[in-house]
Length: 267
Ligand SMILES: [Zn+2]
Image (cartoon, rainbow, N blue to C red):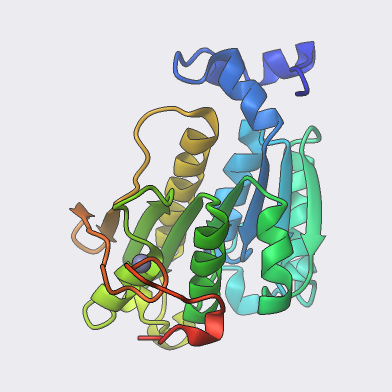
């Protein structure tokens, strides 16, 4: 366990002052290793706060390159980075924000061949992706390895956040996505290209993902697990729904025998 240096004690003083963080929590952040999948709008927002808050090691995964149409909401990228891999562009910005933080860049999309070893090497995963295939793949792998997962989605003026700790009776993402497939656009796999997205909604969702991640890592407060937070930016309403495990879920239900992503029925 790496101890905090004098310089870090000063840098993180306002956070160490919080009773539920304290030196122990800040030390846990320094020793944490977090996987961020997707360095678009959600990933940019989440990664900047995990970096400045003092998470010791971040792995950034994205196979996409920066496009001019990303710059409206993906705040770690800028004009000079157009054409650059998003994970690398994010690393360059984040490295300036906090030189204490170590970064690993995986400039590829997550797939079945890489997901197992990546999740196994990290204590916490943030799903900041923009498609159902990646969400299902991360949900299944994190469930199998019992690695906590913080999930976010945003489209138009709407957002969703949830946390999965894999405790008994808590639902998994697949329980959610089936339930919401007909009623919530943020989960349907619709893209921001077709539907549009207002810049700050990805910031709201990404920041909430960072907050849940920091709570899990420092053991502070009550995680948002077993529930789904729905954000409606147009009306300014936040609504939290408690959700139960789906007993017939292909991933976490009774008798589920799903060992590979291809066996999941995508809703
Ligand atoms: Zn499930």
